[in-house]
Amino acid sequence: MNSELSTFERDMLLEAASITAGKTIKAINNIIKQPAAVALPQLELTGIEHIADSMGKPQDIKTMVLIRIIGEAQGAVVLVVDPNDLPRLLSNVDEKLRTSALEEMTNVMAGAALGSLSKLLNILFLQSIPASTTDMLRAVMGEITGELGEKSARVLCMTTKIQIGPEKTLASMHLLFDADTTAKILAAGERIAGRHYD
Amino acid sequence: MTEIIEVPTASFAIGQAPSSLVTVGVGSCVAICLYSPQHRAGALLHSMLGRAGQRVPNPALYADTGISAVLEQLIKLGVPPTSLTAKVIGGAEMFPVLQQYDLHAIGKRNIDEATRLLQAIGIPIAGTSTGGNRGRSLTFDLSSGLVTITEPFKTTPQII
View (cartoon, each protein chain N blue to C red):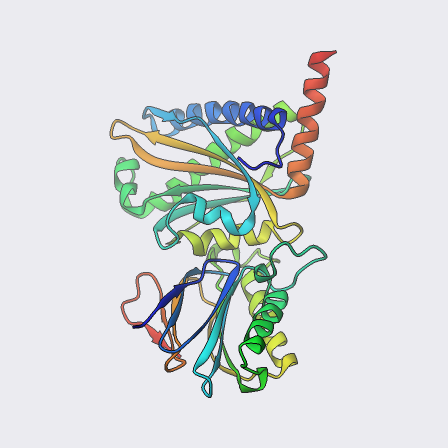
C-alpha cells in the first residue's frame, strides 16, 4: 500500500473493492456456471511504470482483455489469464470462439464491478467495447497504463484474484483509475462516510 | 566478462563494451538505443510516453526528458552527442481491434516524438523497428552497436 493513501482512504477503497469483487463472482457464476472464489482485493496507488511489474514477470505471455472506462471517470478494466488455461476455463466453448467468449465474460464482470461501484459512489462509469490480445505482460500493460498516465503519472489499481471452476483456474481482474478519477472516488467515499457519521 | 544490464520500464542505463543492455516487453513504449562506435559505449532508454507534462517525477518516463538525462550522463563519461547514432524500437498498438476507433494511437505518437527529438538534437537514426501489434524485447550489444529484437511467437530475431 502506498503511503499517500490515509488509513481511512485505504479502508474505504478496500470496502468498495470487496463489494465489486462479490458482484464479479456472481457474474462469473451466471456466465460460465462454475463456482468461483476471490481473494481479498489488493490496492495500489503508484506510478504507471510500476503497475505491470507488480502483476507478474514482464516477459510472461498472458491473454488480456481490456475495457476502457470512459465518460466522467477515466480508467480501464483488465482481465489477465494464462493462455494455457483458456481451454480449461472455457471448456464448453468452441476453440474458435474462446476469445470472444472471454471478452464477453470480461464485459459482464466489468459491468457488475463498475455497476456496484457506481451505485456505491454515485459516479457514472461507462465502459467501452472489450478488446483482447495475447502478448508479454509488460508490453500490453505499458500501453494501458501509458494512456491513463498521460495527464498524471500515477494510477489507482484495485486487483482481485479469482479462482474459477473445480480446477481453480487463476485469473485476475484489475480496475485502474487515473489520478482525477481516483480523487473523485476518494471524495465520494468521504461524502458517504460523512453522511454516516452525521 | 560480458555484463548484461537490464533496463526496466521508465528507466535508462549506460554502458561500455563488452556489456549488453537489455529491455523486455516494449509495447507502445519507445526504446531508444544511442551508440558511439568511437567510444564503444552507449545507452538504452525505455520510455512510456513521448512528452513530459509540467510535473516530471521520473525523467525516463518520457522520451523528451529521458533523452536529456541520458545525454547529460554520456557527456559526463566523455561521450559527446556528435559521436552518437540512434536506433528506435517500439511504438506498437497492442490492441489491433481498437485501432479503428483509437484517437490516442499512443504507440505512433511515441515514435513520432522520439524521431522528432533525435532530429532536433542532430543524432542520426541508424535503424528502426517500430509499429505493428506485438511486444518486443531487445538486446543492445555495446561491442558492435547491433540491436537484436525478439517478438513472441516469432522464431527469427530481427537485427538492426
